Image (cartoon, rainbow, N blue to C red; front, side):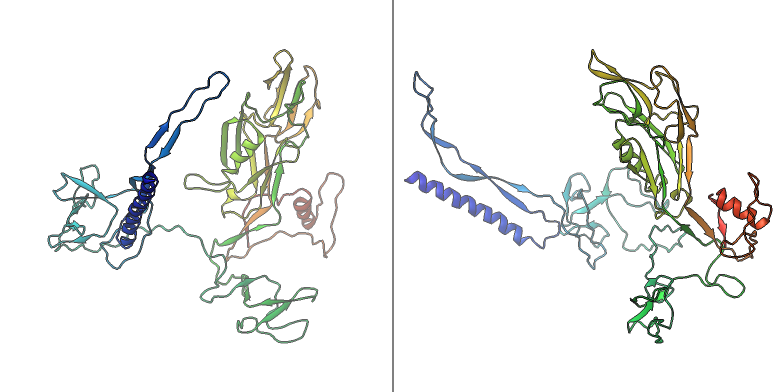
Length: 492
């Protein structure tokens, strides 16, 4: 009876201690830099009334009879979690965001104490102190050299009360920011809309409307006059005067125009991917395995991407995509890689929506000579050892500057035995769907070009000979031979 009462009393006593700890936490809710504590409970020793017995003959053993004697608070634990940082009106208050402590001392730095409380102030002599008068330790600035030497031992931080710091003009300003994508035009806050709205008039109803009046709901119609769409704002466009000069445009300003996503898929010749479950000799596209790693070595939009430990096409895709976005140490490619449906190759896609630099647009892929990932490999099945062995040059597979990534033909197709495989094509490819247009205030001379919607008609030419008519010749070069598919800057 007394034992059960004592166990209950020990629980009440332990709970009382835990309440004391919580009460202390609550009372310090406004204490700067305070870290709360937690009560840790532990069971007391048990009383053994009867010991355990071992199995004998036909009878089994018995567990011991032990009765617990209650609970106690074994310790309290300080919880060093990040507190909330608050703004104060005192310019000597400081805070640490993350790990770390302030160091203070009461004997000039011989003995140091650590605190998270940054409630500091200056005393009458200019010492930087906490509320207990301990001086904050750190490194004072050398006003002669305007530098701080952090290699020395920390000292009392001291600021001369009579010191005045002379003003110095700024010599360099660096800013890193994103421009507003379109909430403002000039000084007026107006949303941007497409170029199909008709200012001041509604074709469907014949009513006059002022679409710049944000106090009422305005409308515009489609080219087929089918629906009304709510609009409050103005069109986004570049204006030109009678002389063809851009209003509010400066020399060198311009835009990127993309008519489609740039896409390219490797392995256009349709060679099958290596199948580890097909226990036979294979000549196939190989992206590596746990036993045989491959090397990824390509240059994509001017960025070299190299990894010697590729074990699968998924690893290659993931690694290529780490270069999509630029960072502080290197440019990005703007290109996203995905595995194609049969897993034999990679599809590259650039929707031209990232960045404004040339290397973030279109697709310029160069497969380096030392690339072995995603190339044509020979896999030999070893029946005795029940495993594949790999040799990229047995039988001979000649790249001759051509990669399976960019090859347009294989001779002979799907070879057997000791035939030599030859890849035909180049080791690079360029897909252009985005063009850069730069404004120039000077008049531009454009060559004549045939207009498919009118004009004197297209002069076809004969055989392989292009047309002699200048307009037809330019049209033939641009449309038939793709001469406009280049990365040259266009001027308007």
